[in-house]
Image 1 (cartoon, rainbow, N blue to C red):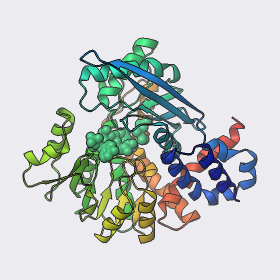
Image 2: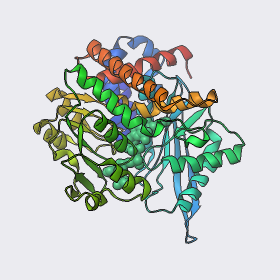
Image 3: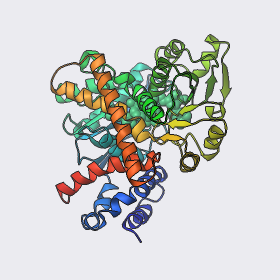
Image 4: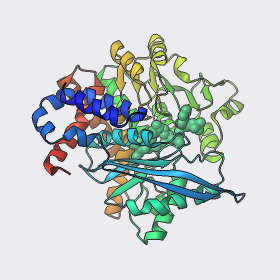
Amino acid sequence: MSYVDEVFEALKKKHAGEDEFLEAAERVIETIKPAVEANEEAYRKAALLERLVEPERIITFRVPWTDDSGKNHVNLGYRVQFNSAIGPYKGGLRFHPSVNQSILKFLGFEQIFKNSLTGLPIGGGKGGSDFDPKGKSDAEVMRFCQSFMTELFKYIGADEDVPAGDIGVGGREVGYMYGQYKRITGLYEGVLTGKGLSFGGSLARPEATGYGLVYITDEMVRNAGKSLKDATVVISGSGNVAQYATQKAEQLGAKVVTLSDSNGYIYDPDGIKLDVVFEIKNVKRGRIKEYVEKVPTAKYFEGERPWGVKCDIALPCATQNEINGEDAKKLIENGCWAVAEGANMPSDADAIDAYLKAKILYMPGKAANAGGVATSALEMSQNSERLSWTFEEVDGKLKDIMVGIYHKVAEAAKKYSYETDFVTGANIAGFEKVADAMMAQGMV
Ligand code: NDP
Ligand code: 2IT
């Protein structure tokens, strides 16, 4: 059995039941085979892959908190510190009822390669809780965040582990957690990113994941001789990533016709009006179906996902495994010629097979959504030098990073597979730097 297969077989036995993690690990390990085989003896001797697939540590803790009626609750809190070979652990916190160790391990594992692709010195980590912020008051969210940080603060630091947002964690939650960290430690340091502008946040961080997704999509379609101008774009989700992907796609002349949440999707044939979405989602914290009350020419489809809508480009920006093989087939049959992932692992294995078989343009999440964490690293740089850069400066660097990622991925694809196999390209390009650092640092 090859070294790669041996390691994956052992992993499956050791972590049976961790479906999301095993799915992510299998996909990476399978596609980095040619790069591993080129150095198989040295990597095997150094147990490189065995170390790569095990987190350096996982911290789990209870999070007790009291709701507004005085009732007590206990949630689970986690931080997966996956790999610090190329920098301090870096990655978001997710608050969602579905959160468990397998999901956070999959996200932390993906983060290693994503962070490597940015070219910046950040290792891989992820954390969160099964707490559901939906329907909670600001005071409840604050008490939860304070309790969560009262345990987490022991394990993080500006040069150690720097969490940020993800699903269910935005500016409000980061603010409450930052306040509690500062209160407990007395340190005014860049321990979290995605902070508010008045206390060390970076301009363009809220926009960064969605903008970065569209920058890399633009570079990908241009290199294929196509254009975003006048393209019809289908987007899922209606949170941070979906909103700013919509904004940048519209700025570049595309027409975005859908957004969604876990209850259904909206279709606006005239193009999504983002000011309406901002008001519903960011001010009222409401549901996306409210859009059709404000824009009567739009339609709402309860319980459905938007993949049956005819489009040129699909940008999934909600959550993992939101596109299955059937959905992918529908997209391709309807003429979709490019998919780029704002979410982490939104396409399942069958969907990816369908894209690769049809040879449509497909940029996987770890490359396509790296603009968020890259801009987080720029926030860390600004915090270290105690300066704030302008929006144009940060946005310009973000754009350069995303264009750079496209070319790294495309070159690795060409070298190890075929020209547009960006799955192999992204995994190998991300892996090489981490492998090099791990080999140089010895058995740690
Ligand atoms: P938000 O919490 O701002 O928004 C999440 C959106 O996705 C909401 O519309 C939500 O709908 C929908 N969603 C979440 N879970 C599900 C589900 N199980 N089924 C259907 N829809 C769901 O999160 P973000 O926009 O920050 O994150 C979206 C994706 O992008 C995630 O995969 C995240 O990991 C990834 N990402 C985020 C980055 C960032 O900087 N924020 C960086 C890189 C990747 P509902 O309200 O119904 O739950
Ligand atoms: O998945 C991700 O890359 C994020 N949620 C952003 C992480 C970060 O540290 O900014």
